[in-house]
Length: 130
Image (tube, rainbow, N blue to C red; front, side, top):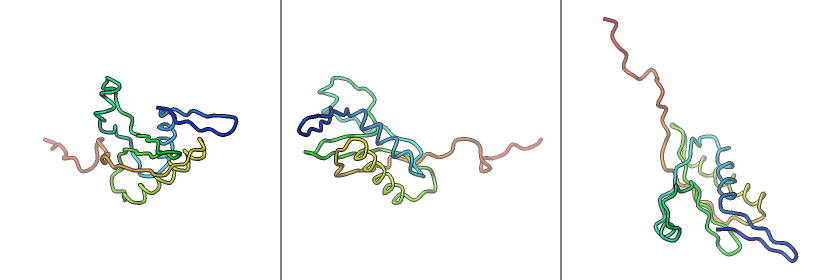
């Protein structure tokens, strides 16, 4: 799917992949965002395209002259959800509008999970010295 902007003389076509990249880069700048999660498989898109390719963590939906964005992400542990979600909404909206000239009417932030450290910490049981 491509998003088209037109004025009197020129037209601009921006692909969904480009918009997704802009959104991911903007969300990465927010403190507390750990990683991104694949969005759930959309059955209708799968049927239309005929493949089960990996879904992007960003979903772009054209809404007239506006764009609606949904982004699926994972947080760092011990972080507050609301300030991170608000930061992601602000950064994604601003980045897409500044880079494409298209208006973003909605940014949905879906917290898919929390990434916990998997490397060793002091909470692991220790071996005895026998």
